[in-house]
Image (tube, rainbow, N blue to C red; front, side):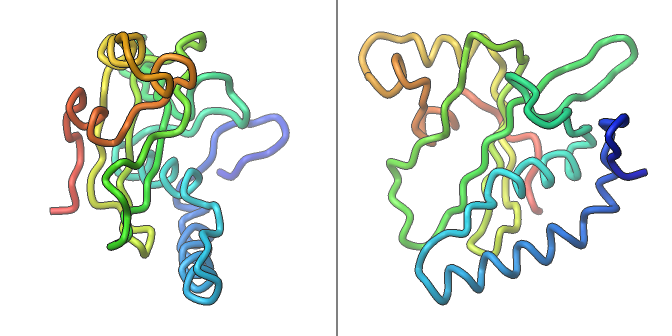
Length: 162
């Protein structure tokens, strides 16, 4: 089933070919221009849902991008993605994480330059909140951003390509 105006569920298999084409286009765009096309977030959401058995949340859902239902419990995930190029600096940061929204965990999908996932990390809300509210960095405290290294230190690997 694909998404309609009244149905918020997306069948991942129905969009897999679109994501594959988008990855090829983004790679070619970067090759020709040296600039990113800006699809990392969408690819990360698709790959996290596909690899971890999650369901995409409705578009523009405040606070989370995907859910996983286990019995009566629903776990809500923010999903962040980062492409790791050979020239990528180690000081890379995640996008803004907003503590005022409802969510249970943050997933970080690490992608190759071909937009293929290599690792998926998960950090629970309590660990993310503690890291974001720790005294010190303006990026952490005011902008709600964590460095990749800090996020990895509070997260656990939940999927790897091997």
